[in-house]
Length: 244
Image (cartoon, rainbow, N blue to C red):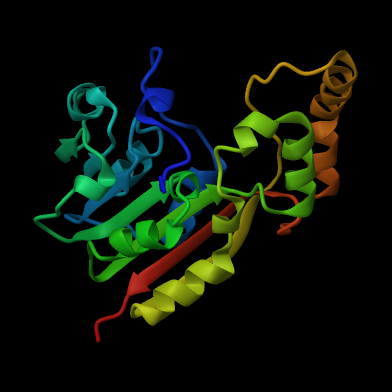
């Protein structure tokens, strides 16, 4: 049985523009829970095109990345170097073929584990390369919450099928990591209400309803100012590997 819900061909297409996110919810999440560093190392799993790596670079980390996109080993580190960030090893390989020759102070993945059926193995492999007293940070989109699930199942079914919604469960991540000797710093939901989708061709009636929903989102965000597993945009966890 194939463990992956997507293919390499799905991800390696078109042209990507290297750029950093400004005030993105994930970058705010990173800054909130990951400490500054003078000489620590950070590796992102599924790193291409590296939009969140500059945040770690600004915090003092040496940047590393794994992604099977062929430009991950050349274009991405070249761009990061041009922005004056410290870079280490960038590999264009499948994560499950990666054999780490070091441990990292921060191991991060953003929107990665949910593309696998056996996501627990993905988390375990990421956890295995965290240095003692280092941090593991994982986020996924929250398609599992009932409001988000309804929206994606109604207007974004093809994209939804590429995601393992069972993996979008911070409580389950907490159990896995605590059993592996990690201290849980945060687990839960963040980002407020948002809805993004693929480019599925919809019937006219659904397209019109979606048009209305998209224009109501700014107002809905003001009403739903709190976080909830039902509608928040992201699920996330930050855990520190215990000294013992």
